[in-house]
Length: 132
Image: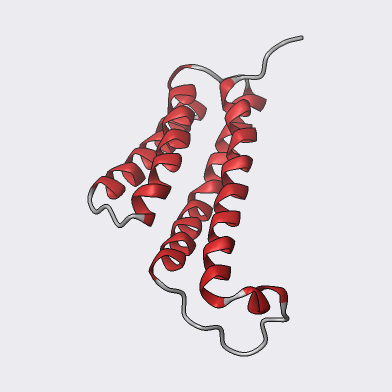
């Protein structure tokens, strides 16, 4: 059995990260808004999210902004046979930076959070360079 290229393995793990962020955001929002709100039809205006749930929602939205590019690049590298090298390093950098970003955002760590975001973008750039 051949092993998956790192880029494709990280694509699978990125789904785990996405689901974890969705569940974290949902849990924090439910804590603030209540189980009745979460289980109900959510008609009308929702109570604004507090600090932690709001940060979790924004962190998730930020992940979703870069996720399509990661998916496209990981698949593009695999299909074109260009896995490895700086593309692989970029995929690892993007993934690790996205993991690090979540607690930094939740706990309001300034500047370092922005560095984690910049590192994730550098990871995408490295993948793009390898792909092109």
